[in-house]
Image (cartoon, rainbow, N blue to C red; front, side):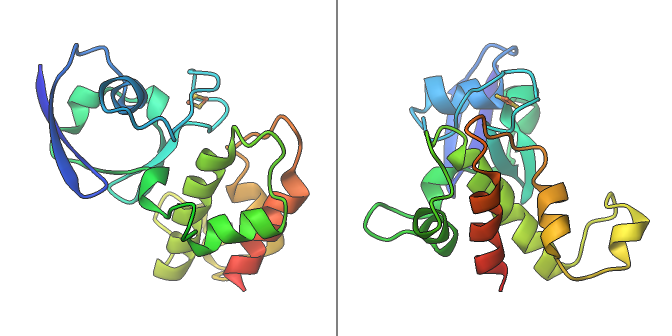
Length: 165
Ligand code: FES
C-alpha cells in the first residue's frame, strides 16, 4: 500500500506491506535507526516518537494508518555538535548507562514538557489537571512508560527537572 509519512518535516512516500509498523518503517525502510526496538510489544517505550505532537509507542501502530501524519523522531532534535537542551541535560547529568532507552526517554520527555507548557490534554486524569505544575512526582509518573534496564531513573529525572526549571 502507498502511504506518505511526514518525518521530521519531510514527506516520504512509501510502498509498504500493511503489517509494517511505524517503528519498522522508520528503521528498515527509511534508515532512521535512532528510534530503538526494545520489546516490540508496547511495554518499554524505547520506540517512542511523536505522532502529530503526541508521544506514541511506534511499535504498536501500523504505518499505513498514518498517511499524511507528522512523525517526529530523535533525529530531528539535535546533532552531536549541537545538542538540544534535553540531550545536553542528559549528558551533563549522566542520564543513561547503556543508552539504548535514551532516544525514547528524550522523545517522551520532549512531549511531556511541551504538554506541561501548553496545558495537559484531556486524557490526563482530573486530579493531575488541577495541578498545572510539573512536579518531580509527576515527572516520575508521566515518564513511567519508558523503562531503563540500567535503572538510571534518578539521573534521567534530574536531567528532565533541570530543563523544566
Ligand atoms: Fe515499542 Fe518496547 S519497542 S514499547
